[in-house]
Image 1 (cartoon, rainbow, N blue to C red):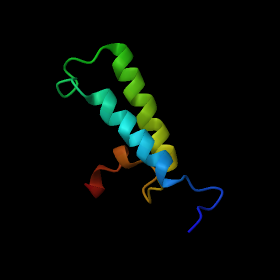
Image 2: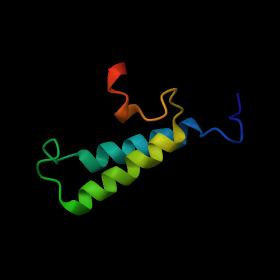
Image 3: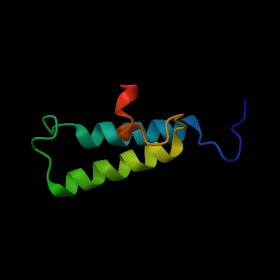
Image 4: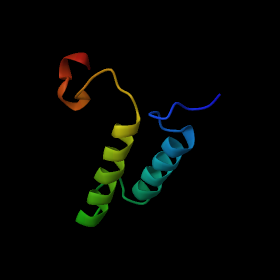
Amino acid sequence: MADKPDEPSNSEIYNLKKALMDSLYGMDRGLRASSENRAEIVEIITQLEAKIKNPTAAPTEALTLL
């Protein structure tokens, strides 16, 4: 089954998730993260959010849905 042109491939999403996990490794839940580490993590999360369809436009602001 081929991906539609506007949909990311599973490998793209997998690679971003792997990059995120690799970035988080050894950070002690963020307590050991430098500002550079945090910036890298935020960038990866932003890329992931752009690739994954979410029915909630701003999930971090939709506290009523939690």
